[in-house]
Image 1 (cartoon, helix red, strand yellow):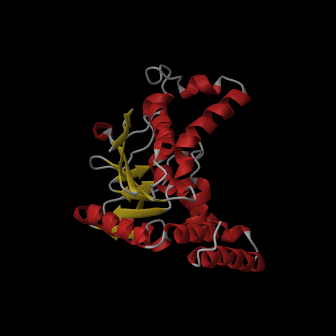
Image 2 (cartoon, one colour):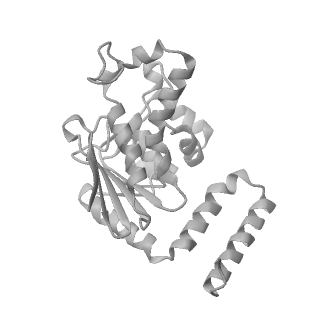
Length: 259
């Protein structure tokens, strides 16, 4: 069932699985503000039954980053150029960036698990979109790079928090400040990629992971995801208390004593 098809974003649902596909393959799925609005809308149109969301890109690249026309004086047709945005007030610029970030923030919702299927380029905004997901399955030709710093910018699409969480602040700084490429084998070694396979195995690997995630009861996965997501912000004793509270809910639910 098709839920959305606009501005380079195609969303379908099949039972408990939704697939979000970037469809601008001719431009290596370069991102635009219109695509970001469509990605944000994708999160809003998902049926409540969805448990797993798969994010993929058509063609040979996941996403080669931002459409560079956004930095040109004339900008992208129908959009303010970033140069024009920069001339606005601090409040207006903050609001514009906050709107852009909405495309990247819903993927870690507690009620679902998101998987980025990454092949080819995942550059800049493409890297941050892959980081927005809970899990990343990569083809062995995947190449990540955070090029914002080399353009005089910073990564601002909600990617810095998950990157530091995955690889630590020192390695995250080195990756971002140099803008170098992180190839698939290194990505797996440092924790950016959960699994690396050949390009022809990518769809099958994602399908296998999706099936494994769906095999466990939904509420158990939701509770476990919440426990892990909050673990670094809690002390050891606070985490133990959170585990006890979660397990109490699960046991009562299994015994038919839940709310």
